[in-house]
Image (cartoon, rainbow, N blue to C red; front, side, top):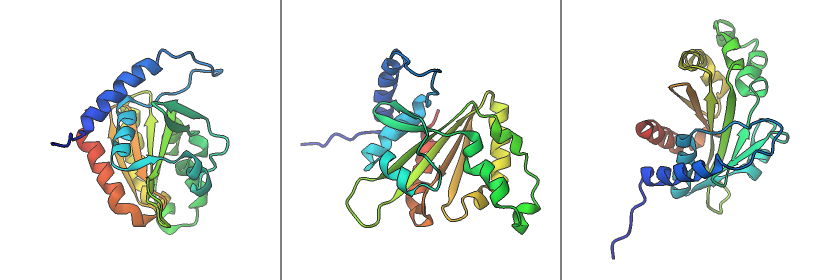
Length: 204
C-alpha cells in the first residue's frame, strides 16, 4: 500500500479554506484584530506536519519577552501573539546595547521599527518528550507599504546579529511583510535554517 505524501502546498491549501471561514466570524474585540497572512498560517500547518507544534504555554515561561499581557489571535486553531513594536526586542535593544562598541558605531534608523501596522509572532516546539526540545519563533511584521518593509529589512540587517546574539536569526522581506526567524538557543540553528529556507523557497 502506497503511503500518501503530504506536500507543503497541500497543507497551505487547507489553511486558505479555513482562513476564509475565519474571516466571516464575528469580531468580539474592541478593535479589529490583526490577521496573519494566508502563507504564514499555511506555514504553521507545515510545521505541524514536520513534527513541530504551537508552543503558547511554554513560550510564556521561556521567552525573554513578557508575553503575559499579549493578545492572542487564534486562526486555524493556531495561537499568534500580537507584539507591540515598542516592547519588541529590536526597539528595546536601542537602550540595552548602548556601550557596545560595534553597536555604538552603527547608524540605524529606529523610527522605521515603530511603523508596522502589526507584528504577529508564532512560537513552536518539537512535539516530543525529552529534556532537550527544539523550539523557535517566526514573526510577521506587516507594514503599510513595500518600501517601508524594505527599509526595515535594511536597517535590521545592521543589528540583528547583536539583537539575537545568542539565538541566531534569519530575515526575509517580501511585499509589505518582514519575517524574522529566531530561536531560544543557537544549538537549534540547523532546524531553524531548514525551516527558513523552506519558507523562502515556497512563498509566492
